[in-house]
Figure (cartoon, rainbow, N blue to C red):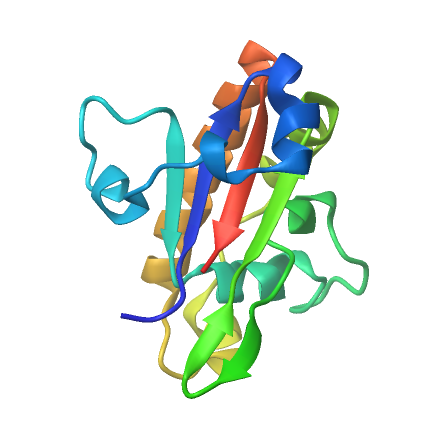
Length: 153
């Protein structure tokens, strides 16, 4: 199945608790949430495109400086042997989400040649679909004054 990215909205009052233990603030079944179950909380599913978005936000493709938007997807999993890995979890407070939303709104869609140079098996349509989702999600959270918790696992 592979390593995927999931993020969930987080109330400002929950940031400190989520930093101590983020798992109660995430779904037990993020894959089902990704398919738009009506009872799931505000969430963002980036499938495996988090790698490509890391690349775009890290300043590759003409921009040498990492973008603030990198905070949304930075982190990597740690291999622990036998094909297993330890996931990465991060909590972002509302002020960071607001900064990300402002920055990610400025990110232009990627072109196929640029993304294929770094990820030969990917394509611009795939990356741009998830870029758009990330833009809408962070803009919505910022508008509501919310933070987020995300996992790459």
